[in-house]
Image (spheres, rainbow, N blue to C red):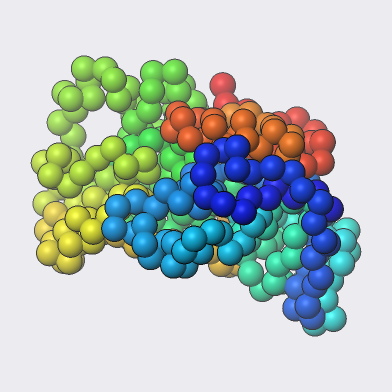
Length: 331
């Protein structure tokens, strides 16, 4: 099978197409023919060894000190089950599924445990849209619901509201009953409104600095805020929740504790129950995937370069099998 392979850390050009052996399934796994995947910021950081600050060495120790241990990246996937292990009862051959595998999705086939973050694709959702969901939506859900403990009626400010995580943070914050303000570029304000934001702010406009509202939660999805700079915009018990954080934020979270204005950090997990809940929201169209562009697997280097620009809107999708149906694209 074809796979996007890298055997050293570096820029986008270290990734190239290679013929590799088909993966074999164990008793509790399924084999998926991948129709679509994505390139995310997580893929970029792993490929480039771009672990933030003091996390560089732990990242290298985890994923390969001198060279990557795993050679095929990609977490998001959507495709069809082509084989099931002896112990698998949840899925059958031919099922359309989507999920998050951490690694291995930038290939024509992957294996994943049937109890991992994989679920049936909702009817009417394209493979491309389904692939655009897991990483961003699972991250947004865990950071808002579990770390920030967002409650109905609270006010939340989402920085990077048109990005891969931000588009789902806006939608899920509304599902959770919050009043949402989204920050994005002027070009993406209409998109952020269409996702359900009650208020939008152009990060480059004067009204950004003039915003005097107070928020119960400030979610920074792109790493351009810091606690000192936004502390005055929190309510007396408000939480600043950065997706990208270093030792400074870890220390601040310890110092601010659980009372008053505080910093909340954490690492999101991925589980089947959360993905199944998201699938229900997709089916009812309470949330939707947002796709900026689609690239064939052979053009994965260009996809990486777009992600590394830090200005993409929604997801950058890899179409490993030509897409079916109409894509949901950013407007």
